[in-house]
Image: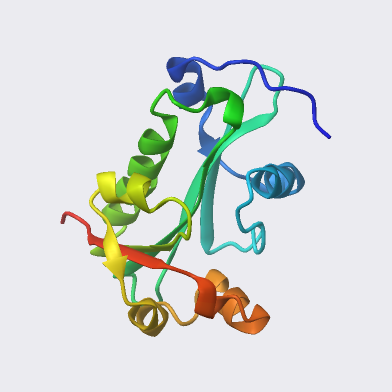
Length: 165
């Protein structure tokens, strides 16, 4: 069990967000497991991940995505905020950060899997999508392949939204 994470101000969280490096992999894995998100393939170069750290260096938030081979579709993943810093808009800011970065890299549509956070994603413009459409445009994504290989894919709920040019 980890020790409690102290409160983090919005400005501190924003300034501590940085691209995750190989040295963050173990801590990011542990953080995502603690918040009950998929913690696989965090060390794969084409999975773009960022982490925010508190003053003690502990990860308190993360965000990221994978792009389709053609670069037009982004699979948002690992958007998480530690329970101790939730409710201050960090999750929304982190999700927007990933969406903006994917859009800047040429993605025109964002996708994600979420069984529990539909209302959160709907507030960001996502609509429930057909899971098979997500799989069709992102078949090589690590998360799709993982969910297919573990039999979890049929339980997942897909969401999607257009990204601005």
